[in-house]
Image (cartoon, rainbow, N blue to C red):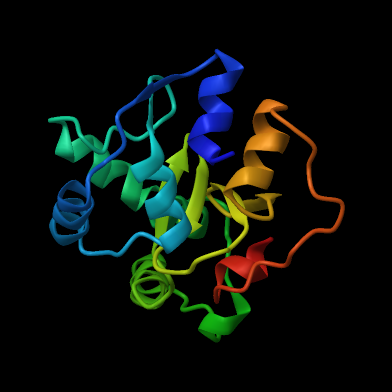
Length: 175
């Protein structure tokens, strides 16, 4: 059973026709990333719609840009407002502006996180990666993959017994 089938079978979600290859390619070109193969298959198998789900087909492209920026903007908020500093960035600059510039520069080099649902994300182009919940610098693993995440998030089946470790740089260190 596909992830979209699991959502549809629950009766709690509206599932639209999946994204076509052309729609996926156009979205990737527009926003400058590549969906991971499993995320791509999920969206092609059926497009969940409604509250919390990114509207990849909708006209509000600025809302999608905002969703795509949330992980980085959340980290920058914590740098500015909560004294967060990642040790991999080296010593924290003394001025707030320099600290934000250093953090922003580094964050432009880490894997881009793509929204799956609400604050749940998958890294671009990294198939089989655990689903992460990202809210500012609070990063939690929510499932080993999309199916496991659906089981955990929406109680649609049995979650996996063993947790798979996130592998993408920076984000794995915040888990």
